[in-house]
Image (cartoon, rainbow, N blue to C red; front, side):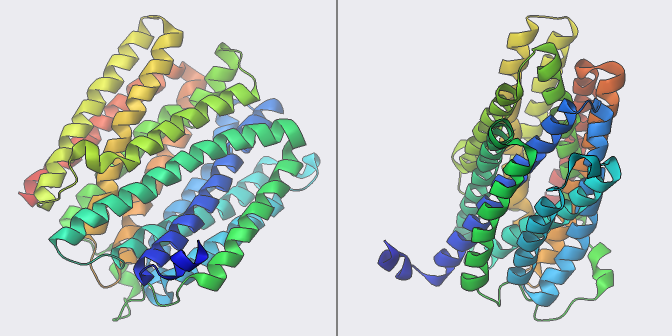
Length: 408
């Protein structure tokens, strides 16, 4: 097996290392998110207070994506990726303290570190792929496929991480679960330090810091659509849904984390198959943007129907479960198309600058969605969160329509 790996092309070996690195990080990140939600709900925290625990996680994710893209172009993506792994280990270790120490401010600080780590890792992994495929028409189809596999498999493992977090909390308690995650991530970190090449992603012409905000119209519009898309998901998924399942369905930790895990795994599997669902051959940016517009419009309709059914208490249990999986499938295709488009639109020299800017918008969407998820749910309930999601999706569709017009 190792002999076969040694004979693989260099670009493919690097892709496997980057993907494995991203997988390990995502597994621990998903587990940590579920650990924090369930453990602090168990301690008596309300939905808004739990949402606030993730506030710095998302805020520093915004900052990291912006600055991290510049660092990736300056230092190389291998360094930013390995820094991300090291910071996540430190963030996990910060939470291995007595319960009395786990104040809101302290946990927010640990989550801030985790947010920096996550987005350094994501930006590095997504940017590096562009350097591993040929820059021609066949390479674009390969790029779509590789981005879809990386993103989809990552999200499937994030779902496994959700389930792992609930199981570890039940079996070993909060601190025991964290120690398990530290060991897992440390192994991945050592492998990455030893085998990941050191020259991936360095810009030939060192970019000035002011170039972080100088983007093309296409990237600005795509980033706006991404912000609204992810805010529309997180406004009801991050805090509102798990708390709703625990309080209204009376599910225990394992049931909640298990269900959330199944959803994210299914979401990731659909995302990895997006090239087959939409048609893998890429003919032009305009063609792909048109596909993105059709899929985000479909997502608006799906979410609107789900909100209406929930509003009128139509078989709530079945409606929520089935509707959530339909939403996830359509959302996954949208997300995969976006992930391809940003790597395709990004400048060849210093890809991480454009990708970092785009994922800054992604992080801003998660931040907005997370805060709204706790606030709207606490004041008005899950149905209100769904209607906010519909509004955000309409905004995403408008931005995508302008992008289609621009590309046309």
